[in-house]
Every structure is written in structure tokens, then in C-alpha cells.
Amino acid sequence: MLSYFIARYINPSFLVFILNKMKTSRIVFLLVGFVISQSCSSVTEPDKLPGRRDYVWNIDTIRYPFDNILSIWGSAPNDIWIGGAQPSDLFHFDGENWLKWGTYIYSTSSRALWGTSTNNIWMGGDDGKILHFNGHQWEERFVYRNKVFAYSTITDICGNSPYNIYAVGLISNGTDDTQRGFVLHYNGNTWSEVYVANFRSQFIKINKQENKFYINCISVYNSTGKDTITFFEYDANNLNKIFSKQLNEITIGTFNPIGDKLFFLISSSVYSYKNGSFIKKHSFVIANFGYQIYGRNEMDIFLRMKDGLAHYNGSDISYLYRFENNTTSILHNAAIFDKDVFFAVNDPINNNDFILHGRLK
Image (cartoon, rainbow, N blue to C red; front, side):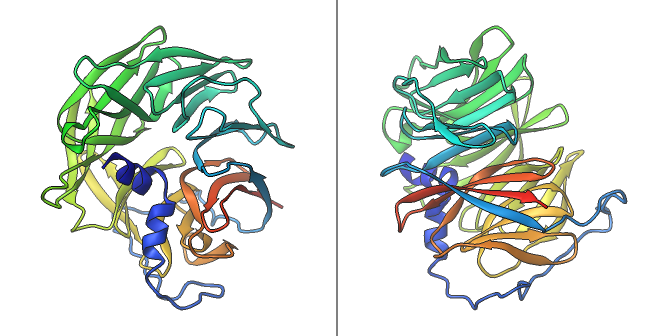
């Protein structure tokens, strides 16, 4: 069920809808029941100060009729891109206004956005197409067509230089039984297929830490009910499994960069990964947790909540912003800068998408 897993992991409103069934008490300022644990080997760096919370918030409504935002990326607070499931769902923020991209991009969604600068941005979507923005226009640069599988979807793009970029996704013949994860590589000149899984799978995220890349995979086994979350370290065209758990054992398994480090969220616990070992950093056992984190460093972490956005400053958690209803959900990634933060938000009850933009005073 491709749509199920893309909704669950790419579009977080599905997860929020499920979590909404859990009735919890209202949290006024500090979240009650917060438990923070930190191993003796994970001492916070001494030069990190508690993250500030004095944001001024703006709501920018994006007109996405019967659709929602799927991706966000920016090089600076005055250069933010967001995309959705339709070719026309591409918007750019210039520091003042969100403007719809005026030129129609034929037959591609924008599930994946990533770049190195304002004139070097890559986009991928549901039809295997990868497009490039050179600062002036979007151009089709590659279409992934597997020799065996009919359909391909680009779910994420990431690199560590303009000449070393990876894209991941899934291919299928229209059924769960044929789904396979894949990896594409760009060498600064051309895109090429470098890996196709030989097991039923969807590669849903890729990100980097130092010179290594990590892939978030879900193995689809609907007949047995034992769908599995796996993290791979990708090195020299090889997948090295570093974590694997069935979904009936964990709530979620995902990762996001916080500063220059990659942090893995497994159920309610946050881990770093180094030298072949997971190191537990925090445990966010809190009401209304939306199972996604973003941030600048370990003392400046944003938490997706069922009913808003919260913040951990190294010692406690406080809400920064509350939504009108608890089915409103923040996207799985965000655009974080020194003073500005941008979160893409979907409100399915009111059929509304908006950008939650915070700026420190």
C-alpha cells in the first residue's frame, strides 16, 4: 500500500490523526510528565547555550486546494521553496511574499527538495523525474526508469557537495509485493542508478553526517503485519544495516539533522550514531508528542506536537505555538536558520496549508 506509507512517513497528518484518538490533559506552559535522560557519554558541548524562545510568529497561508505541502527547503530566510503533489504546487519565498512559480512544470510532484545554494537546487517526485534550478528556471535533468519496474517515486534528495548527491525512493509494478527501494547518484555531471534493493522495501529518507549517508527504509510485509523500520549506513554502493525493528515493537523510526549532526528518533527516544553505536541522548515521554524533531543543537530542539510546536532548551519543554485543533500537523522537515525558522503545516479539517514562520526578537 504505497499511499499508506507515504501518508504515514512523508505526510505526517496521518500519524497525527491516529494520535488524536489518545485523550490527554491540557498542557498550559511546561509539559507535564516530561522525562529527560542522558547517558554519561553524551555530555552537551559547553559552548552551547539554552535555545531562545522569544519568537515573533507569522502565519502565511498557501493555497493548495485538495492537496498539501510535501517538501520544504531553503538556502536563507529570503530564499525558501515549498512543493506539493501537483506540478503547480511550487512556491518561493523571497523574504516578503510567497509567490507561485509561474512556469508550469510538466508532470512532476515535488516530494523532495534539496540544494547547496540559491542557484543549485534539486527536486524529485512521483514520476521518477529529477529537476534542477539554476537560479532562473527549473529544467528536467533526469528521468529514472527501471528496466523491470514500471513506476518510480523520488522521496528524498541529499548530498555533501554539488558533485556528490544522492536520491532515494521506491519502484514498483503497482503492488506492494513488487516494491523495491533504490539509490541514485549524481557525480556533478550525470545521474545514474547505483543500488536497487532485492527485498520488498521503500526508501523514504536519506541524510548525511560528516562524510557518511544514512537511509531510512520501511520493509513492507502487509500479509504478515510485520512491517519493519530499518536504518542503513550507505557506503560505496553497499547498505550496512545499523538498526531494524518491526513496527509493532516501536512507534516510529526516523531521523533529522540537528545542526551538523544526525539524530535518530526511535519511538520517544533520541539517539546519535557514531563509530557503530547508538548513543541515547533524550527521551521525550510527553503528552501530545507528534514524533518528529528539528533543531540547531542539542539545547535548541523543536518538537512536533499534535496540537502545535514545542521547544526543548536543554532543561525543560514549553509550547511555542498552539494550533486551533489537534489534527493540524507539521511536515517531517523544516527550514532552520540562525534567527528564522519555517515549518510547513497542514490543517486537514479546514483544508488549509500554511507556513509557520518564527523570527527571534
